[in-house]
Amino acid sequence: MTDGSGGETGVASEPRTWGRWFGRPGRSLTRRLIWLASAWIVLALVLTGWALTNQYQESSLRRLGDVLANTIDQVVLATNAGADGRLTVGEVKDDRTLSPLQGKYWAVAEPGQDGRLRILVRSPSLAGESLTIPDELPARLAAARGAIISYNDPDGLRPGGEGPLGVPLRVAASMKQLPGRAEPVVFLAGIDRSNIDRDTQQFATFTWTALLILGLGLVIAVFLQVQIGLRPLYALRNEIADVRMGRASRIARSYPLEIQPLAEQVNRLLDHNQETVERQRTHVGNLAHALKTPLSVMLAEAGQQKGPLPDIVRRQTEVMKAQVDHHLRRARAAARAQMLGEITPIEPVLDEMAVMLERVFEEKGVVIDWRSPENLAFRGERQDLQELLGNLLENACKWARRRVRVSAGSTGLGQMIVVVEDDGPGLPEDQREAALQRGSRMDETTPGSGLGLSIVVELTRAYGGRVSLSDSELGGLKAVLELPALEA
Image 1 (cartoon, rainbow, N blue to C red):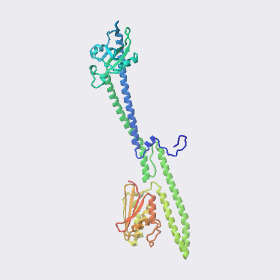
Image 2: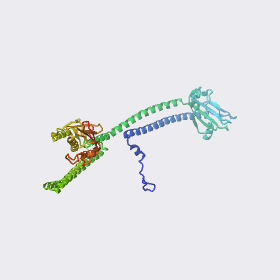
Image 3: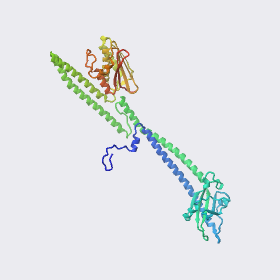
Image 4: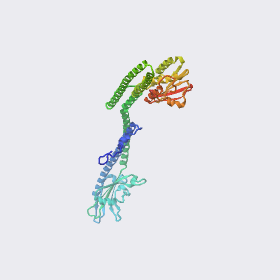
């Protein structure tokens, strides 16, 4: 964020309002798009309905105003002022003003001393009634200088009001100066506007109904458009999930022109990841070859010599070789764990490990009882799974008296659990954490480098899992291994 001078203020700028609204995590973009589009549609239709209804009403009232202006002109032409100033109104050729309460009325008035208008002559259609005259009308007419002022009869507008026939009126008034009369004369004309109000109400009802139907159609169209428009993104999301879960190795489907570049970039990323892993594997293999060859030579030479020095060289070389093997396996595991799409069924690997280790420990009479669902699969490479299960099962067979039990199952959360138990002496609780450390050996009389369980721990962590030790129901040690699994 920059200050007014263009320099950096050192404070991260806030996202724009729209970006912040659309970018909030945990909210559905589809729902937000639909709500936003629906709000704009409703606002536009409400304004349109109000504008159309108001325009129709104003147009109708203008037509009434033209009729009233014509009536005023007729009355003005028919009005004469006598020598004494008295007004007489001749025949006005409008049948509706000749019969009582026929919906059209006129009157002639003059301003009184109190500022109010006093009716001098009224049309036969008023039948003794009077048009309602607002108190402020004389002042408005004086200021209008002969222009016509129109208004709605308040009696027709106020609830409970009583105008002629109890119907609302539209009234027009104009102040004129007649020859032979010093005082101005006010001419008023009124007409029943109930038909206009009824037509306006019908127009408004029709308009709002049509706009409501149109609005619902537009909202449904927006919903379908958003759903159909985002469907390729949903499909791409599912394909990426399939790649992550190992059900596919690449994005295989074709997508619309706008989304296809994204799918291609994801495939390029997968290819780059695969190439990176392959390069890491090559480097690790080269390193293994470069280190193991000199160590093998040293072991061979030390084995041909006798004495304290060759024995020390041989033992230390064996330790070095074990350490090299350990770190190489760890590097390979870290490289393989970065790969997507590798899937290894559990059942055949367990069967293979059980058959092999029962033969190795045939003299002890160890029996390996294992159970695993047929569709359970490890989300990783077979070699790593063999390394994990082989180390745990071999450790259990070493310490077991007669029996080793293995059970595997899915947690339903993209994870699987493998439990390895034996009926051996077990391991005290205060020594279990140390047993998982690299190079730790609880019994120096057993063969090995002490790296077995630590390899299991590091391989498991490379895949985002964990290992724990506890007491077994068989009396020995129970190792629980949590690993990523293929989701059904």
